[in-house]
Image (cartoon, rainbow, N blue to C red; front, top):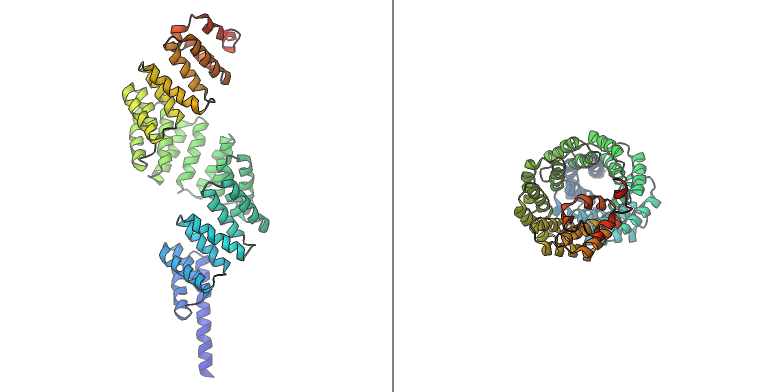
Length: 419
């Protein structure tokens, strides 16, 4: 009888260590959880719950290989365990193995149709792989089963922001905030949606609240910097963008946006070193060369600017902005036929870019082609009448300015009435 009691005490002690492991995991004490559950597995190597706990703890500690092996063992022992399929899918998703992750999330839902977390994570994979509309349905499925889940509202808001549906995103983020009022990521999501709606002053406030809660997150400073810039507060924007870079010196977008702000306030001498850092981070990205082209043009180095833009176009041949800037440079260099080829390439892709019509008109006017220049200027002003004001004083139109067909463009226009 004494031996039986000793066995029961030992079994109770083991079960207690498993419970302690779960508590440690819930508290974020992953190393303690791992040690406790590994000790338990020495005597209970086939226990599915213990294998799952051990896999989660190992994953949290960055030991993916151990975690993968544990999940695979658990699924060999219990292939119909929806929770294991789900957790395995989460790890695969984190490792970028999205296709395999989806297979396990789907299997989890086949086994447990009312599994909100599986719907949320399926939505996350869909959103990450560019299928945001399908992701929205997954988040709705989760919310139908558990309407108080903040993660579903947050992730749905994130997907809606990505789709540019900012009013709907704002609604979902505010629902998430009701359940998680001190969630910095939710406050940041609200700020992004407000910014998308043009409500940048409100966005700045929400970004500030997120920063107060989580001051070491570079993206919060970056987003607030963009809204401050849109509000005309360039110096404040620069401070936030610099703070973002200090927190994350590999934040490519922060370097580019800082360069853009400096360009706006004409602090050209500070921009090229930033662009060199950005280029080292993403050597194949066209943006550093695009901005370098603008800086060099303003500094009067037209040939250097042209080389930079051609390098940008080598990386992104379809960029209408780089093509347009290249065309302008070619006009200034007197290479009018090459300039027209740039504008023709843009207009072959889209007619809804009035600046290309206008610049085409400039090049044609320089060549003395009155009819073609007038036609191009009409197309530009039909989309934005301010181009007529520009043409009134633009020296590119001097060769045809006295031509009656050019002069007739201004009769009855707003620009004519304003004189």
